[in-house]
Length: 128
Image 1 (cartoon, rainbow, N blue to C red):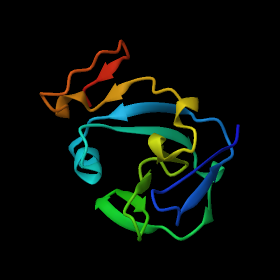
Image 2 (image 1 turned 180 degrees about the vertical axis):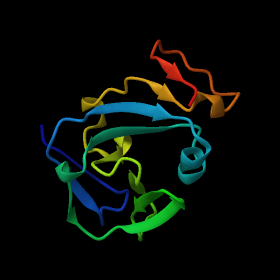
Image 3 (image 1 turned 90 degrees about the vertical axis):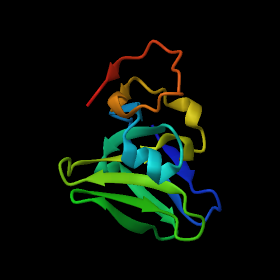
């Protein structure tokens, strides 16, 4: 599978050269605050299967063990990398050119789910 994607303004473009390992919705407070949204959808893939094809990302250390890459022009968040999982990285699902091609499979960090957000799917939910 090859997928492409990028940021809102088009400065950053990337290519994925492998099938995602998985995909899901994250409800943690860090994702909520970094996106300004109640939930953020991610796909996970081998780190070697991700490559920028245009532009250079800015990186923010969002915790002691994780970094988020985003466009320095428009601010679109594209990538999450954790030191705890050095062989994989996460890509924001909605930044794909064809986000419908990857279906989320679960919800994580639901203990941080915002109370007014009501989920109507039957996907598995994990608190931590």
